[in-house]
Structure formats: C-alpha cells, structure tokens
Amino acid sequence: MRISDILRVKGEQVVTVTPESTVERLVAVLGEHRIGAAVVSSDGSVVEGIVSERDVVRALAARGAAVLVEPVSAIATAQVRTVEPEARLEDVERLMTQGRFRHVPVVIDGTLRGVISIGDVVKNRIDELETERSTLTEYITGERV
Image 1 (cartoon, helix red, strand yellow):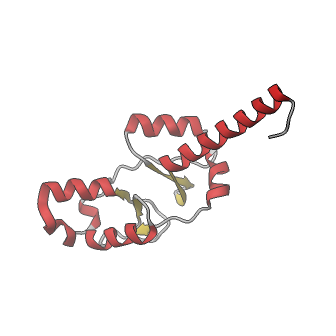
Image 2 (cartoon, rainbow, N blue to C red):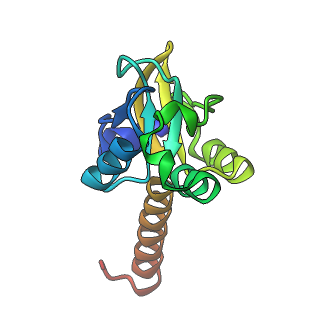
C-alpha cells in the first residue's frame, strides 16, 4: 500500500500555522481541529517545520507558561522528515518508529499535499486485519461473513 492510498480516503486537508503564530494560538488550533500536530508554513504550501502537542508540553515544562506568548518557530521542529505520496506505507511506518515521531508531511515537488499520522497507519492496519479475518472465516466456513 502507498501513502497516496491513505490520502485518497483521508483527504489532503492539512492544518498549518505560521512561524510567527503564538504557541497559545497553536494550542487553540490543535484543540479546534482535534489534532496532535500542525505543519509550520508561512504560505500553507511550503513545509518550514512541524509542531506537536509534545513540543508544547516540553516547552511548558522547560520554560513555564511564558512559552505561550512565544512564536511557534521557537518550539517547532525545523528539520522535518517528509514523504512523497508514492512512498510505501511500510517504509513510513519504519520511519516513524525509528524517528520516534507521529506525523509526517506528504510533499510533492516541495508542495505540501497532506499529513500522515500514526493514527492513520494504525487504522489502515486494523482495516487490513479485519479484511483478512473475514476472508479466512469465509474460506474456512464456506459462508460469507
């Protein structure tokens, strides 16, 4: 399976914040959209960073509530690993596991096209297992489930 297959179902909507947005605004955006990370982008197209709930928590622990008025760029990860839509899901799973991150922007020719989360990966795996179980049950019992 390819990342493009997941994006086809999930959609290509990506929530972005500008580098100069405050951390307080970021927290509001994450809560409003019920997501765990946002791509940092001045124009909504070029990936300049990524910032997650974890980044906020770590910054709060290190610097206290004053971090809420700081720009997102102060806590965001600037060196972002991205993937292309034709990347294999297994490769992205490995990348996420080895890099210990939960969100990967999907980029084509430098343009942001989507985000794959660990939740998307898990949902896909569950769907595959349910299909396999159903197929095996049908094969064994001779009945359609």
